[in-house]
Image (cartoon, rainbow, N blue to C red; front, side, top):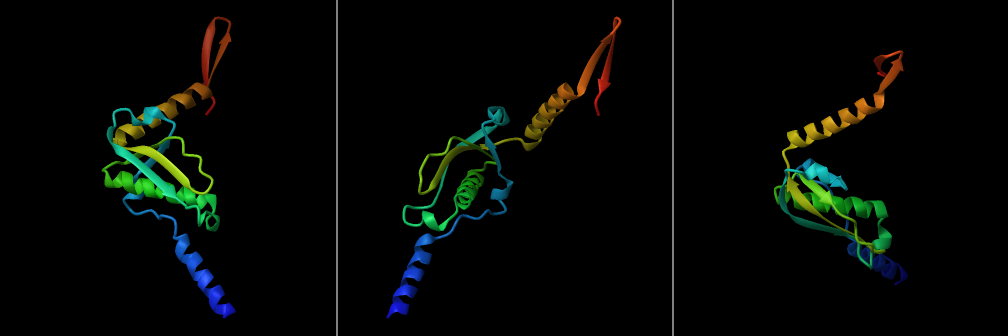
Length: 145
């Protein structure tokens, strides 16, 4: 009888726990952006998406990072279903037994977004690697690379 009770408890816990959401081929194409409003300039808004993992009865069975990962995968899937390729995230809700996030899905011209990011990176690199030396009315630029 003890074995049956233990087995029933184990099966119940396994059934209640569910699992985290895994990515799909489509969702893996969705870029996740956090706190960079410039990255979505010129993009078409496709809709709001909400993702949530964990419940009050099973949160102790999952690591926090797994619930965050599952939530992001859930949101990336929803963004892809709406036709978006960029997911712009907002501050997550502060629950202790689950992870809930919301954001907006955008369809962005990937080439333009990558070009803008590359330009910003190049500009930042140029600003930090150029050293100006002023010697007797002459200016010489030395590239640190």
